[in-house]
Image (cartoon, rainbow, N blue to C red):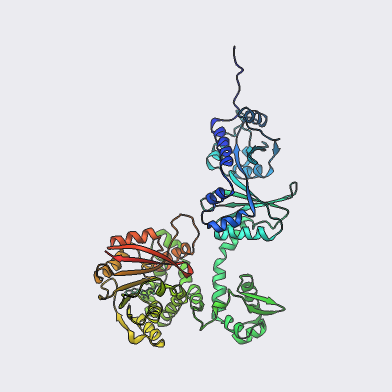
Length: 542
Ligand SMILES: C[S@@+](CC[C@H](N)C(=O)[O-])C[C@H]1O[C@@H](n2cnc3c(N)ncnc32)[C@H](O)[C@@H]1O
């Protein structure tokens, strides 16, 4: 007997993609999908998130001969398709990507139930001779419409707002459109993970849409304006005025800072939207974010605001030059590397050292993370204004210090340590760490030095240290570490571009430092997290 010939409506590839989606839904729970999509969230954060949402479905776009044929074929495979409904959103997205070739071809949606969840199958019919084969091929390769979807289970506005913040700021996901669907009374928000996978949040009710792509991009593009607004706030010492007299009006502030009242009011309004000030009834107050711009406080960010809005800002305009050539734009723009440039301009040099001290909070735990019992002498190589060495000497009375620096920086260090009564326990040495490093230390410090240089120069500095050290003596490295996973969020990623553009150095992963240290004769033993996303690497001279 001849069996009826069943005409396949889906290609083998599309059928496999549907089966893969079904098996994914059947074998993954909310936790597993979150872990796959957002590996940067901690386990606690994922637990928190999964209290407010559940994994609902995955989606796949296929290209059957016809929508009826698709449902028949799904049934033949043992799947139970629901009714086909038209998909306006996916049709529009396809039309945007492929233009008029799409004509008025419909796009259907059909859901297949899988263990209480579902697979959402979008289908663009591609009958033979329709001319849509190239569209199908391109879409299969790019998988633009594939996504995982979570249904948010907590009603109200608070949870969705918190989820958005956590997913974008901690999870590294980027908003990718969405909108309100009034048939279902659901708001759908799309996100892209850092490795470009797409997921969707389905929120019951109407919620603020995420910024449209152009608005989001404009926000990024105008970041330089924010840098300058903060620098102007620093130059005018607005934070000091408002800290001394909270609730000043723009007119009073203008009189006290010598500014134009209308222009200042406009600046203050912008700073308010940036979160540095609040305003009520025409009076202004500092926020917690604005407070570190006060001068004369420990860890004041005032000098850093001036530096980032000043010479480093100018050279950031040459970032494309840096990217084309691999050379720092600072030297291209100012004619010299920043160390000699600042050295010839004492005001700028002093500003640089004060700016480095602004982040000295990262050093606070260092004296307690290391065993100093057998340490008599600590050598701080490129010690800047001595902020780290001072903390070590203050915490450990029996330790004496040696600070190696360029001549112009040594005075700042001497003054700092003298102000704390520590200069008698410290020797100040002028020198060049690429030529030699003082011997006789039990412990060596290299804080925020290696990130200033490319690998070759780092190896030279590390080898000079190794030559000065006895086998078994220790080296501590303080740096911001790049995340090992490409695409993961970290402040080090932005600073790496700053190092490229302004300094000619780079930020590195822990593995990169381990490799450099090994090349120079050190074994990296442990690492600790420090405040401000810095790390302390412990290495031993082999
Ligand atoms: C980024 S700062 C870090 C300062 C300090 N260790 C800290 O963490 O605050 C780098 C320091 O290296 C010093 N430096 C640069 N080239 C040097 C050289 N060839 N020899 C000694 N010190 C140098 C600079 O003067 C600067 O103070």
